[in-house]
Image (tube, rainbow, N blue to C red; front, top):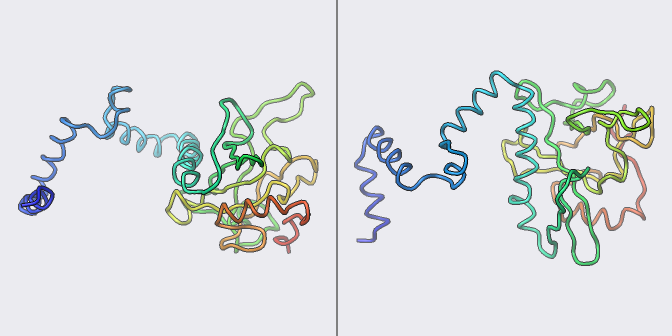
Length: 237
């Protein structure tokens, strides 16, 4: 009998408790992930700590989710795009990924869709005047500071990245769902046109300003010089 089939048949004979005992024994003998040995904690212990964090440290939980959106992007999305390579340098950069086709380099910045109490926020919940049939993303750095001129360093400046990729997990439940727009199309801060507005409305479904395809976003970037625009007025009443 095929070994896999034999194992499947054997599992069917076990009770839920028996399966749990077998699973725990396999984790001891095989382990779940190499990082468990490196940090000296089991995967269960790490997840239990994260669960506690979610309840007791919501800001840290929010930051962790943002990091997950950034780091999983390289695996969930960039490994699937044909003709482009990830050449992201090491360092504290205003973008998260740098990709190239050998001729053109594109900087991609990742942000997690904004949520409140674990529910995806609509744009009007973040800023008065935005519509309620759009989601929202917060485009500013997590930590604040001042530059040598005393200006706030939290806001992003235009041309610090090329494509904004918004992870839509809070609304779709999937870490590989993203909406894309171009940096140069985003809404400027009315107090300083060199800065991005803190909150940006995000379309719920693809349209002329937002797409769920990285390939489409790249084509927009290639054509952007011929299509100057700002998405601001499309979403303001």
